[in-house]
Image 1 (cartoon, helix red, strand yellow):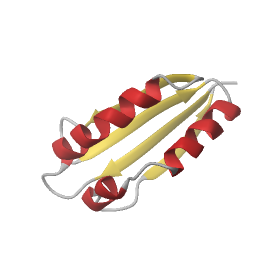
Image 2 (tube, rainbow, N blue to C red):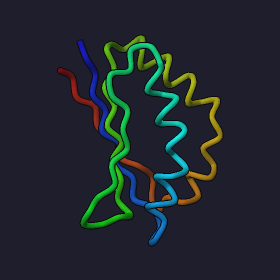
Image 3 (tube, one colour):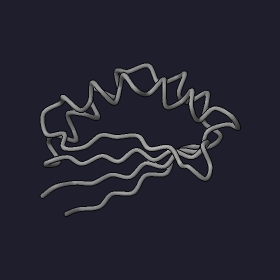
Length: 93
């Protein structure tokens, strides 16, 4: 069963573009992970400081492996740009 995650982030005023640029290498690396069907960050046209990460994984094992990789990444620069913690919703197809 495919797993879809939508992760919404609100960054500090004026930080949307910088956040997206800083995230680009993670996006590219993750797209090559086994089981990754989609991993794309979208920036709102109406509010450039709102971003949504759309993820789709073939199964829970692939998502679990990805989460282990993410635990090892230094996300401090990304966290510093956020205005609030991200929200995360999971959907199953």
